[in-house]
Amino acid sequence: MKDSENRLRLKKLYGLLSPCYLCSLNCGAERLNGERGVCGAGVKMKISSATIYKGEEPPLVGKTGSGAIFFSFCNLKCVYCQNYNFSQKGNGHFVSVSELSEIMLHFQEKGVANINLITATHFIPQVASSLILAKEKGLKIPVVYNTSGYESVSVLKLLSGLVDIYLTDFRYGTNEWAVKYSAAPFYTEIAKSALKEMFRQTGNLKLGESGIAKRGTIVRLLIFPEGLAELELSLKFIKESVGAGVYISLMSQYVPVYKAKNYPPLNRKITKQELLKASYLLRKYGFKNGWIQYL
Ligand code: SF4
Image: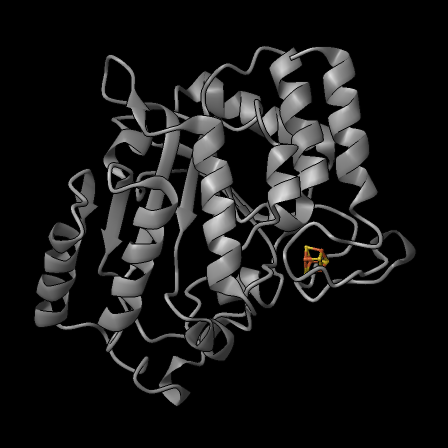
């Protein structure tokens, strides 16, 4: 990637920071003037932790793990969020662009499979600056953009060539659930457009010799209690958008934490029967690539 292209990319990304239109909420917060967005983020980049993590899908962790960077704050307000301490309450510490680039290079020295940016949307100009700096200093391992899917297509286009792997949720099949449980209006339309753009940039998952992911898109589907109708709609949307060959990660790990006890039916874990029916739906719609997380 040429210097001039990266300069233009950063100019456009920083141009969306204040008033902020970095995510699909488009809240317009004047972040450079001290305002914080609906996501909670101000102008300074904040992370909860940077750690070698083995909890992702097998080709993203291999034997060495993924270099995971968990960003503080989030644009979705999920009532069941497992990470609410940093996603909603904003716990964490500030890092500069150069500090984040050093973290990335340090991970590479440790031999991790990739740099895993977890919910970075609201800090993407600063994160892109760190990535460019780290790449100038020799960062070569794949970059994973780990997201809720509630992304702006114009921002995703500005990540083309910087991100190798998109690891995206397709959380809901109806906007009714998206608004009720995540305060994310028009989620289904936004997630569909975003998925198309991610797939356009990276294509389907490609593995290297050792089975480690090099490039591509993985879609995560979290099974909710009484959520099979939502899941079925999501599968239809995904198939329409990028085809049934895309890699799907079907996740059974839902636990009713944070405010979920007040939001039935999300106030319980899923059952084995629900997991079996969800696996059946994958087959019904022809999805054969990916992983199923068993209970
Ligand atoms: S990233 Fe945060 S500040 Fe920016 S538009 Fe989205 S919610 Fe608002």
